[in-house]
Length: 266
Image 1 (cartoon, rainbow, N blue to C red):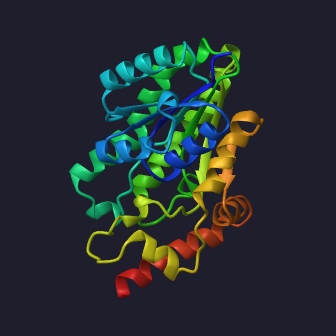
Image 2: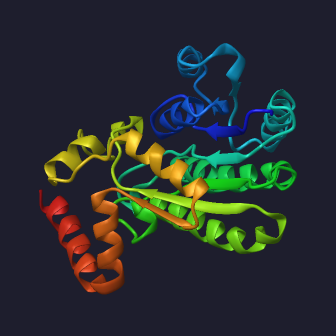
């Protein structure tokens, strides 16, 4: 039988690479896509040469999506069992201080990139029995995070898209999952908030919050693809936030306001 196949954006590092390794260990063919050509080349070395394909691509470019998926599905023997829309960026700082360039870049990658990927993958997923679309959101898609307004907006959009497509694509035999992890120690946390010299990683540590290992997230994606849950909430912080958003939204709101006030005073 032809090996099952998964196509992953943001596949050169972090969650994307961890998921690729987990699925490859189960015998799957993996397609790794990223804008980072050097990172892709380094990542490729960790896989059997006949089980991996790499694509240097920008998820904002629909033409690149069409070309990459066409090539990958041809290499996989006509299969696309899982499309993992994982590429994303983070820009910290207050909404009012965000530049127009950063605004367009965040929305283009975190929202449009996911939409384009889902749209381009649909016919291949429909043609593969038991297929699944997985979109990476975030704990920031559970309750909006002050200081990460655009990032939160994008992740809420990904969550809404995933929930809607899970219904729309059910008649096509396609499952849809949305991944909402808490803080992961990946290059995304190297982002420096405007007007500061502190990275997001330092902010997480100072707040006493935990990092969830990427291997735990990869296992959650595997379980999600093979399970029935639409929302894949991973990590202690994300689970606490989901509980609080449902039962104690006022407390989250107060905490967010206090954190911003303290930042401005400091």
